[in-house]
Image (cartoon, rainbow, N blue to C red):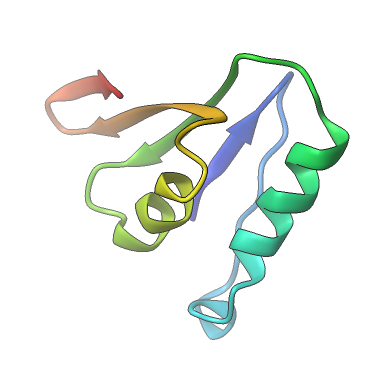
Length: 74
């Protein structure tokens, strides 16, 4: 799952929808309509799917990784 925030927007997909490009397309459309920058996103460090989606938009989204040892940003 991943979380994208301009004020407090989020997207969570059920496992049966993973790997179908839905999150990537949703974030792409979101970024077309929400032009606030910088835009911040947060994902768990061990959530490979969310990180893969967010890395596709790294020039538009500032990412914070969360996990057991606190937060890191890139």
